[in-house]
Length: 459
Length: 127
Image 1 (cartoon, rainbow over the protein chains, first blue to last red):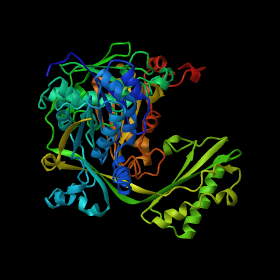
Image 2 (cartoon, rainbow over the protein chains, first blue to last red):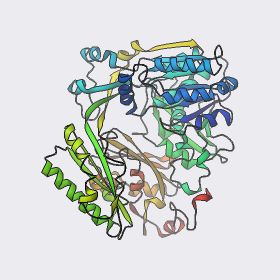
Image 3 (spheres, helix red, strand yellow):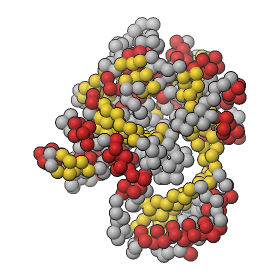
């Protein structure tokens, strides 16, 4: 493959629910070679599993298919290739739906869909446990067998390899299930620059580029504390574009004319986002050392990152398991002046006495006074004096479903049977939801790799 | 020396992993970074969060970015999907950390006065 000078990679979706128009602005608003879209948070897989149990053709991010309907012709015209983990627990279903949409929007014969599968461990979970892979909880050390009957999803975070393979086979749109977020973005860089997977420094550069784009506008001025009030036009925020050179050095920028900001502060905040030990940022393809990054703010919404070093990857994939862990509900009521805070506190006492009287089996009850301590808890300091209003929010959890159901009917009566000047109950009863708890674990790569499949098909 | 809140010297971002949260703290410039290294220790951060964080706090240094990274275990009442808190994913723990007060030389306090806070007279339409 001919080596390019610079590969332009953009992040167009930081999570499922992000700005629906951002990917459109990314493909139309300036030069771009690859668009990476992240749809899967930790909890998403278990939700998708629930959807698929009801409808076998579901279980993927439907929004992605709708998006491709809008942008695919432009992507073909401008040679923008798309990589998305929108496949969820049904990447094949997603690819099938995509193929139908491709025909409708006239890209038949002009585009190839790549499909990466094998991250889903549910089909061979018993076999893996029998083979001695205990998938112990990374924090508590408990074996997965202790909750195996409650497991709803289990996925390995695959590396860049299978995505690179799909690109090598000519895929223009790659759909995956669970792949480590930075690996999704690293794959096109590895492919275009023909980097060796054991070139650890370049793998680290690729992973860093992925980390910078994977959360969308979080690197271009969104959710940034540094002089946030002066960051322009977040209504048309430019999402991040990295211009990656063959050496692995790259420049973070955004499309001309877009809102937001790229500078030392916005990029630094994203680099330190959701990391542990910065010397050992562990991904499936490399262990990157973030303390070796050299950052230069070049002005004009351009920040250059270079010099990052990497070490060989570990022998394991991270596994994310979701398991059913009881029930939860939360309810709110608004109390107003005078003495709003005192009324809300009195209502909380009434509620808790009711719980005791009813003998509710609640494992935890949490009270927040929104407007004072919901965000910062005990760090919020002294209560506001003479607050105009305070929202009482009470949340509970329990393994005993009936107790949570009963709790959900206990907030509304406070309107007539509690302290006065209360409103905001029109939303109805607190919704009871099943808790999907998160179980992080490791599994040897060699136990997963034989199940990984890459397919490429012409639309 | 003058006591100032950390919000005047640094910006921060926090996120979750299971029941742990991390807070990346970035100094506004390289002259302020040594003050953070000296005073914003893991012990002080643990003390600052009190009962809101039940596990240990670990600190890592990124001098190349003038940044510190704190990992707080037991920070999220059981983690993203289990937690009963509005802030189940620890998104505003970063701002909570910036409430901390540290001692800085008088000239630093004077130079950074008002940093991190919206200027007087600002309106939302300005951005």
